[in-house]
Length: 171
Image (cartoon, rainbow, N blue to C red):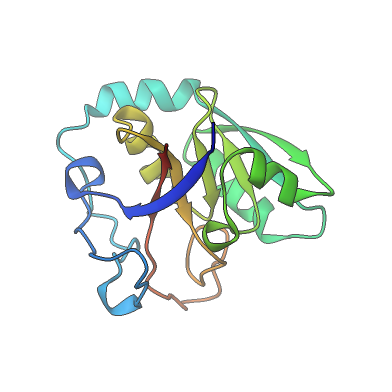
């Protein structure tokens, strides 16, 4: 069948974030400030999340010419997530195969053992929370583009508010 990807924002019941409204409007004034380390979801059992994280291995596909991908991998490893890095010449094929559209893409694509997709500079804590309680009909999460201040895109104290979006499978 046809495979379509649509965007919806992560609901507060899943990741403890404020619901942002229309995904087509990516204005930063309404964006969740993922720099807030206090954001948490009490519904997620911390012990289970920690246990799942220690077993989690993500396959990370990245372009050989991108340095920020390596910084994001370091962020994941510091959070206790194991990674297997695959340097790819044709990232467009990887993204297409996993349902990532140009509008939702970034520089690297990570795949969980269950087949969930984590596109771009998604913070480890949101990946862990998503995997602990996946969104119905979702294929993963994305931070489109390359946002200053997101994991792997740190530049001094610079920070641009950004949104973590849900990739939904429609059809």
